[in-house]
Length: 287
Image (cartoon, rainbow, N blue to C red; front, side):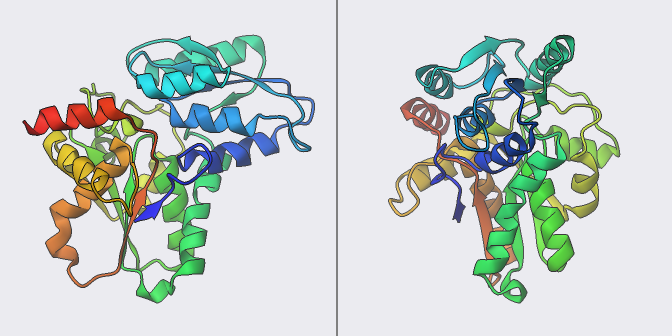
C-alpha cells in the first residue's frame, strides 16, 4: 500500500490544499471551503502563518454526516465550522454561495485544477520510487474525483499502460454511476464506512472528464467487504490505522485479486483519520 496516513494531517488532502493556498494572492485573508473532514484539516493546516501564507482565516462548511472524530479534531484546532445539509454536494453549494456573496475565495475539495494537481504528486512520487515499466495497476479511492484525476493524468502522460482502477462503496458510487451514464448524475447516498468518499458531485466538476477518459476500470464494494478489509488492516501493525475510504480501496483489490495475480499493484491508502467508533461499526456489520 502507498500510505498517505503519515501526512501531518493524516490524509492525501494536504497536497492539494497546500498547492491551492500557496497560489492565492498575498492579500488574501479569508477563504471558504467545504469538506467531509480531511480536506478541511488540510486547508486549516495550509493556512497556518508562514512566509508564503501570512494570515488566512478559513470558514469551513461540513455536512451533518461528517465523522465526529474529524469534527472534534477541527474544533480542537480552533476551526470556524458551519454545518449544512446531509449530503456534501448540498454543503458545497451553500459554501460556494456564501463565498460568492461575500466576495472571498472558495476552495473546493476536488473541483479545482490546483487541488487535483497537488494530489497528482502522489503519481510523481510513485514513478520516482518504482520502475514505471514494473507498475501494472493503481487502486484509487474516489469521492469527487480530485485524487484519481491527478494520479490518472500523470500516469497517462508518463506510463499510460498502467491500469487505473477507481474504487467506490456501493452505498455511494456517484462518480462511477456518472461515468457509466456519460454525465454527472444526481443520486442519493446511503451511510458508508467510506465516509471520506461519500456524497454527490458538483454538476460542473472538472474531475468528470479525467474520470471518464483516463480511469480504466471501476469497482464497487459492499459495506461488509469494506468492514472486513478495515478490521483486517487494523490488525496489521505494519499498516497502522487507516480510515474507511482506505479500507474500501483495499476491499476493491481483494474483490478482484485473482485478476491481478502476479501483477505489481499499488493501493492508495488515502488517510488514517479513524477512531474506535468506526472499528466498532465495522465489527457490528460483520456480526
